[in-house]
Image 1 (tube, one colour):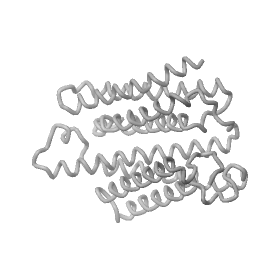
Image 2: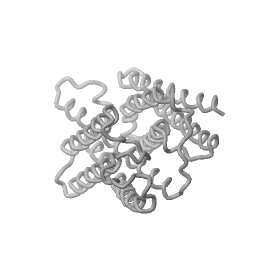
Image 3: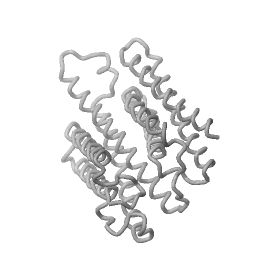
Length: 282
């Protein structure tokens, strides 16, 4: 079983890396068939990670949602699934070539983590309530990740269109109105998922008081959740009311994601707070 998990896990990274190369070949302008190859590569890669996830579940008899490698695995599977749903629309298909390199970078990070922790047994998490809560949280974060990447693409495209030196890569991107609509759709999907996750989280505080400890409101995971809920709410309602759209909304999402990532890395590197999902340290 462990060797099969290894093969699925590392083969997935190889396919994400291949997708990065085929993305470059397509965007360079001389390999139009590479678009379909890129899409197929990331879909198979996500499938392999899902296989690794299921095999770890079978191997340990526990839902693998508690180690960092499992968290990133699931985030990659969900993020790739969201990407594949988005690019089914013909004008949005070239976006897959902009999503593939960041997914490969996330996969590379997971490979670095996986060298030591891939065969670490996950913490027991057999309660359905906790599994649903965690699964919805990962889905909301995956939508936030893809929304942030879409925002970055919007900003790049807006700047390129203003430049007199438009390239083949600019021409292959969807029009700005498509990118704006896609960004809003991702926020509209993520907002209710994260709202439900937050409500379930507060219910879980009382159902499982030992998971976060007495000072649960100071836990890093709670602070991240509040930040995410606020950002989702602000972005969704501002866009719906017409106060923020296009490039302004894109900047809000990119800056918000960058701030969250920077804070997470700071907490992880300095050990000021435990940013893990199940440790009770606050």
